[in-house]
Length: 93
Image (tube, rainbow, N blue to C red; front, side, top):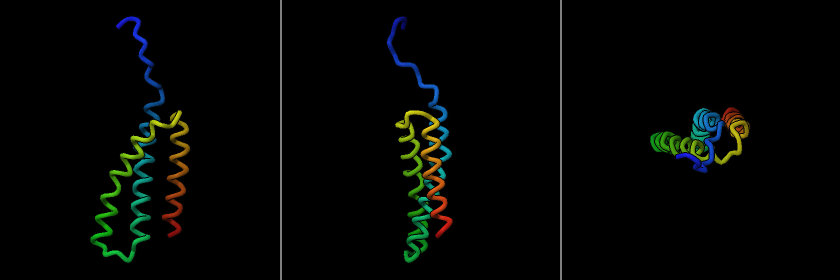
């Protein structure tokens, strides 16, 4: 359509998507590991299933929320800091 006023696609959508895929996975696995470590009193069969099944919703939540960042760089920085903090907390436990 000539003369349409559609806004252009932002250039950093690929950067945001990659941040959500890569760092979202790190966040999901770190939160799953923290859950498993902090609930050691729970039977392993239940704890393992809960830890396993909480990964996809967290990962997809991060992946869908990453587009609210104003730029791809901000997404990488904020998610990277969160992932580093959670990985450090997991390491300390």
